[in-house]
Image (cartoon, rainbow, N blue to C red; front, side, top):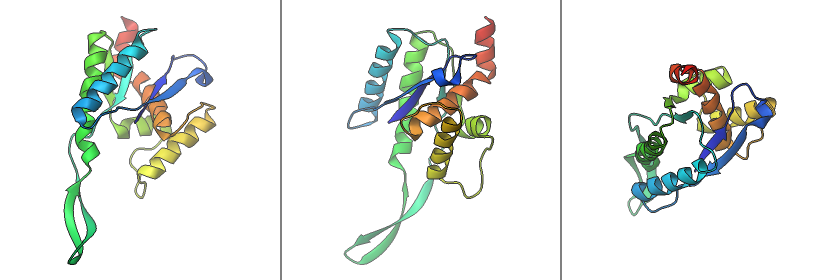
Amino acid sequence: MTGFAWYEPGSSLASIKTGLIKAAGDNAEEKAASLATQMVAMFKPGRPDFVAIEQPMRNVVSFKKKRQDFGGEVEEQTINPNALQLSSLAGAAIAIIAAYRIPWECVASSTWRKHFLGMGRSPGFDRAMWKRAAIERCRLLKIEVKNADAAEAVGIAMAGEACQRFKMARAA
């Protein structure tokens, strides 16, 4: 699931529209196709002037995981399988955005968090804490969000407005 935010710079923050897209499918390719189809449907009534998406991690981080087997507890090295799909989903989104000739920017998570939350990477913060911080920031700004994915989308949209590509697109 991913969030989205329709944001018109200069308009009231309360006018930001947020929502969720669930990429359906059994594998990365089916999910990418599902995401692309939903984006096309979103763009039919009116396409955005600019799109900012969160940059997927460029590396896959491994970690140790404990599990039980017949011999007892076993520690194994693994990765988050969802991390492998994020580049496929971002690629599908960018392909649709580019096909509509909409300028776009990938915004790193540390960049949008610093812009939106006022802090980049903070020691001790985990994924759940970042999500709660994004929801709280939206509440303070009186922006209605259904969940953390939508709240993070607001942060990404606002950080997108600060990027050079957005400024160039607005000037054109």
